[in-house]
Image (tube, rainbow, N blue to C red; front, side, top):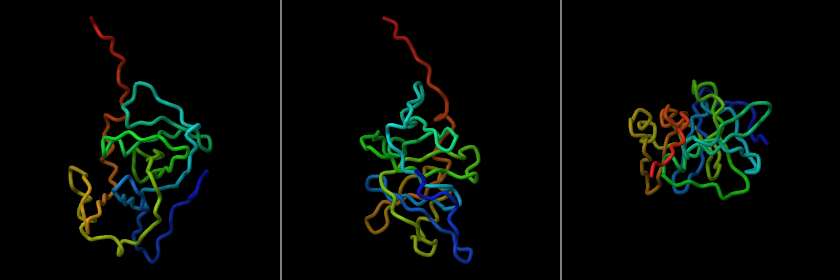
Length: 163
């Protein structure tokens, strides 16, 4: 089920952000990096063996295979999948090789213009560690595609233990 199936229109050239929640962290996705928002039944999720735990699996949507990534596991080190429905932010072609990837979040909050987000958050876009910042006792993180490393997409080999 697609909640948003076309790019978000910006008012008068103002950059907009899709806000989502991941535990106590508020995520800000630049709208030009988002193609749609999906609500997915966990029963549709097909596991991908031999991939890192950050890859939850994949789904079929509108004739396309969409890999789903758990930012909870990648950012917070906590695997989470106990819900019947997953909220997914699907990345646009502006993310290069990540086009079509689905990012699983806990909650969708809405959108805001760039004038409504803390200026400190905009400065974090070029930080190499991509860690959340704290503003007014609230953790925030500006999504950057670089957080999804190339190693994430490499299958892990099944290793036999030698006794």
